[in-house]
Image 1 (cartoon, rainbow, N blue to C red):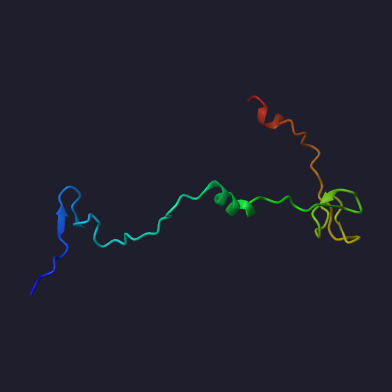
Image 2 (cartoon, rainbow, N blue to C red):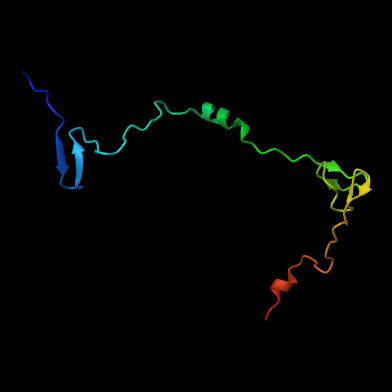
Length: 106
């Protein structure tokens, strides 16, 4: 009767880990999938062809001619489908945009 050689387990003195004779760590799943070939630039770009951002759809308010999103009440005049549905947003005219509030010397 012949004995089959068993895998030799040795203690790596440097790392203090149990290793098989092939060098694999015991107790870990070392069979992760890896790509066999590098992905070409063409294949990569074809995969990313649907990642582009699309411009939002815009329409014009028939009441005040402001640009607005379709199927949404106009924020400038408050109209939707020919009816007043909300109060228009008011713009604070006291702010001139110069940033004088923040640049004032103390």
